[in-house]
Image 1: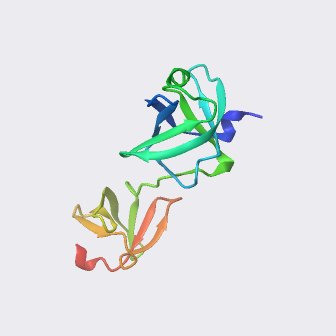
Image 2: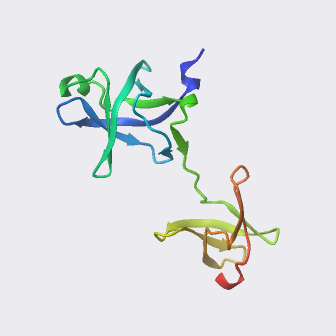
Image 3: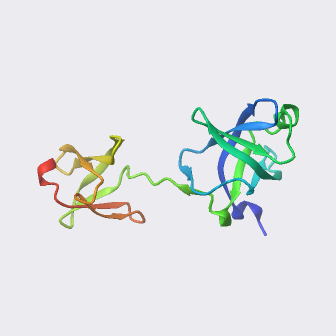
Length: 167
């Protein structure tokens, strides 16, 4: 059984944090956490592809940084040897999900190719996509039910409706 196929690389231990064996954890930008991590297994991979397995003892956010404490690593000296190691989670644990980016999605309007998404933005209330139409016009579409009919992530298609007033 190949362990690499059962695991997903989700980030790395960036540095130590404090003196009690905690780490600053960098989560890859394509992922977001979807489940509680305390008590779950975390796999560390070194530059020789060797794995160490730890249980997460504590996990919290401090000033927009993710901090993780692993069972059995109780001081900064023990923690130091794991800095910069790759962090992996078991696929079956479903602890992270991939962030889906709408960038480069094809826009379908009235069942015709209308253009593609060239930029993304969040205005604090909802997401918006900037569309470049097939006739080179650019405009923003809010990602709300009034304008978005369907997301087809498999085919990278965004079906839109009622956009006449936005162009």
